[in-house]
Image (cartoon, rainbow, N blue to C red; front, side, top):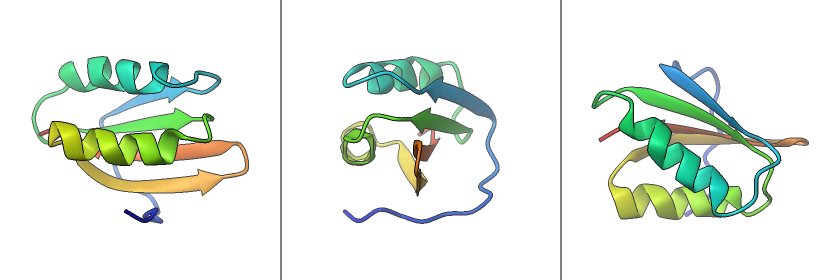
Length: 83
């Protein structure tokens, strides 16, 4: 799966997982998604270089929609829609 470039996706909650390495960003994301209602969007900021691939796999495995990912010098931002 290739990286999806996005701009200005509206979101309902935000999680800063900067500085955390695998598997912590995914574990914290799972917990944050569980607190959201179906259809709400979570924005997650990560700095782990493997996070884009991890979030793509997480979305496939859990059925949550990965709406987009934006790479920046400091890391990556992911937008997940709760199933």
